[in-house]
Image (cartoon, rainbow, N blue to C red; front, side, top):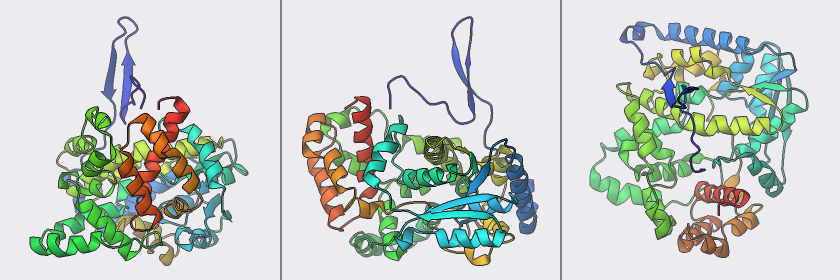
Amino acid sequence: MFAAVQKLDPGSLLGISIDTGEVRQTQWWQIPVPEDSEAKLSAEDWIDAVDNQIHRSVQSQLVSDVPLGAFLSGGVDSSLVVAHMGTARTFSIGFSDPSYDETAWSAKVADHLGVSHRMEILEPQIGDLFEELLQYFDDPIGDFSIFPTYLVSKLAREEVKVVLTGDGGDELFGGYETYVAQQLARTWQAVPGPVRSGLLEPWMKGLRPRPEKKGLTNKLIRFAEGLGHDPKLEHARWRLFAGTALQTRLLAPEARSKIELPIEDHILRLENEAGSRPPLDRNLYVDARSYLVDNCLVKMDRMSMACSLEARVPLLDHDLVELAFRVPPELKVRNRETKVLLKKAAARHVPHDCVYRPKEGFSIPIKHWLRDELRPLMEDLLSRDRLGREGIFAIPEVERLKREHIDGQANHSHVLWSMMVFEDWGRRWGAL
């Protein structure tokens, strides 16, 4: 975001010659390509190998001379981490909206494992919290979950100084619905073209979003949106909210003229870099090298350290990462079930219904808050006067997005929120 400031690529180091001043980037570690011989292991052998390596990875990160705990959502990843800790102090938060609250699951897992668990249902002053949290992002990200991550970090910091988290499990073992959507897209192509384009796609796009977090209607809408992006992006089509078509409408002509790279460039480069891996492993590679390092870990680092809390990520121990990418793809996502192997490993330690339940993700009801608590902030940051002075965004298109979202015609929360974060970033750094 700042001119002449760049990020070091994952698994790379920067060498600087004292004599000449030459700067060179080299890669010291890379996600391995699996060997065909390893696929001969049985499913049970793979479960044993992963479960045992998680235990070693977790145990290796328990060394601390200060109080240590863990985040526990009650999902597969955090439950596995806590199960391999032994005794632990765990923390979770929830919200009054039941479709965004998972505290009942975290309490059940904690009770089963016999750990000391603390949870709170929170209704934060979200506008004030926005002002506080955005100061920690000199490199802005448009992830809603900065709020719950900060709040659970603040809760944990009252008792401990270090926490273990479950970050990385989704990207290593196939936990996201984008992977399922990509598999469904292949089946979708078998539907006759006129039926797809003339009947089903218009019907899905015409659906109004439901107030709950997910549900069938919201998934159908999102599936149709992803199908509208470049198929070369594979699963990343369902990560994209502002594709080329919307970007063209959303940016003012002068701003569009300054775009140096297409939106898709980064993902397509990583897909090419992934090489000859199976399709699912290619998707996982892309996420590990983009969404994980540039979003999830940045969010966790900034929000935990904002509370002076150290967050450790045992599922990203390099030995476990290398093992995960050797696991056959069919033990990760199969028949629309995500994290096949990891769920079987988790079911050895926690109740079956805690493992085999719909994945919700760690998020907040932002789509509702933009219509209520956060609407004044949205109207301020995305006001006609402000946008007119800057000349970056096309005002009619921004007004359309706001109107449709407020009226409940569509869920534009991801795009609106990203613009709000960008506008706030520009205000703080004097860039706009």
